[in-house]
Amino acid sequence: MSDEENKFPGENNTGHFWDDDLRELDNEPPAWWTIGFHASWIFVIIYTLLYPSWPMIDTHFKGLLGWTSIDEYHKDMKSIESVRAPYENKLKDLSAAEILADDDLSRYVTASGKVLFGDNCAACHGAGGQGNVGFPVLADDDWLYGGTITDIEASITAGRQGIMPGNAAMLDDAKIDSLAASILDGKVIENPAYTEAGCIGCHGADGKGLSFMGSANLTDGIFRFAASDQLSSIKHTIKFGVNDASNPKSRNAVMPSFGGTKLSDTDIKKLAVYVHKLGGGQ
Ligand code: HEC
Ligand code: HEC
Image 1 (tube, protein in one colour):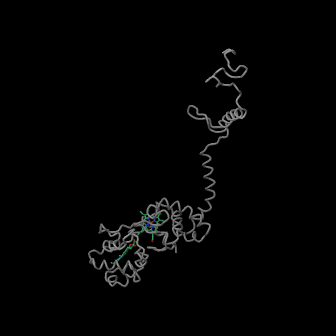
Image 2 (cartoon, rainbow, N blue to C red):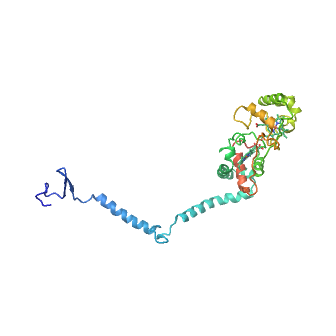
Image 3 (cartoon, rainbow, N blue to C red):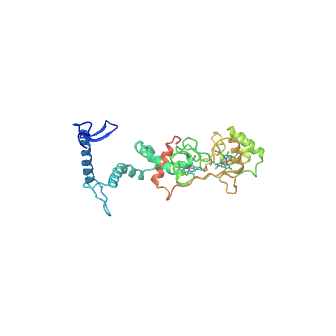
């Protein structure tokens, strides 16, 4: 385009016009932009030289620093393990009770016990040991099998399976109703049927249960087989029992065993301490 046709002669425009006076100028880009542009390609070259980068046919350029993410991960793991090692070594030789008595160790164990609990126990007992219908609360001080650290460790290692035979054949509905009502009132030991029907043999003269067989305390108002309508639930338990193999309507209450190949001794100790510290340990 000649200067005659250029409506803005002497200006460094490119000769492209729109709408009469809108035009493209040929200025240098601003300095900040040019510096940024050169800095970024220099950065890319240096970065790709130092770190693993360019793909090649069956490998890739490894980078002058020899850095890999897996090495970094291994290094981090080693440093974590070196922090853990002194603890883990001690745990092997100590009993759960000794670990519990040591503030530093039991704090360490509670942290790792939480993860183990989430992986192995929370599905039944709830994330914080708060229990579920049919699965006992582990965070209170009401225990079927006892709440000492040794009791808890035994529950986890060998599992538990309390057995109560159903009474449907032995007791008529009126007796079952009256037993259930007095259990709900916390006064079952005053009910003559308690002794006559042999409940006393397992639940004890005081009605508080015997921890060696896991028979429930019938006087504390804590029931674990229903979320509501405890009266009907208690009647059901009395009629059909707990883990009574001959009775399809029986309550199912099986705590699996975690000893042997399932969890290591150290993991079981960690869990015992963790459960003890949930709040109800004795
Ligand atoms: C499949 C479900 C299930 C899983 C998983 C389970 N439990 Fe249990 N647990 C039970 C049941 C059911 C009982 C009650 C057994 C009974 O009534 O005889 C129980 C009882 C217990 C008791 C005794 C409670 C008391 O009152 O004396 C402890 C302690 C316990 N579980 C801890 C654990 C720990 C720790 C884990 C994880 C390692 C775990 N449980 C995993 C179902 C489970
Ligand atoms: C052979 C021992 C045995 C006898 C006999 C027995 N029980 Fe039980 N009972 C148990 C066991 C074990 C449990 C289960 C505890 C658990 O797993 O929560 C249980 C649970 C219960 C529960 C449920 C408690 C809850 O937490 O919901 C009730 C109610 C109950 N028994 C009432 C009775 C009554 C009433 C009698 C007498 C007619 C009786 N039991 C006879 C062993 C026995």
